[in-house]
Image (cartoon, rainbow, N blue to C red; front, side, top):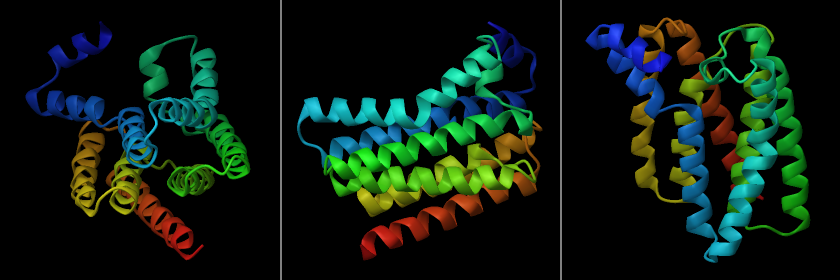
Length: 205
């Protein structure tokens, strides 16, 4: 209700920025990216459900539960963590979850693509979390960059066109004054380098 009221009061430019922020939210892009990779590399429907549920529970759920409790269920605050310091614990929980997921996936001999996407998540969580100790960095621009690169490598090079989403999201974040241009560029740059190096290592292994 509050979100729709906010959209109604905004100028067309800010309404567009809000719409982009919703459609290209890290949760939306992250889930779509994971689902695409799992469906591509895991043919059995029951195993698809297992890997999707496992990755969501290990990498996203702990941070989401923490934010839900921390913000007492206020959805808009959970989806838009403005305070840089409030991001530290979620980053830590995601890193621990991704490390645990990598260990388990390696032990059960999961498909390499599933291990690779988990490694990409881990590297970016560490890099973005470390930067977050010193300066605010945009996970909203990091997510489309890492998602497009990972899909381009693990699914089809055509997905690399989705990198064009990154500057659009960056514009929306700056327009809504959620980030500065520097923070938006920093997020996408860190994700691009981190994802590229991780996939390069995976390919070498």
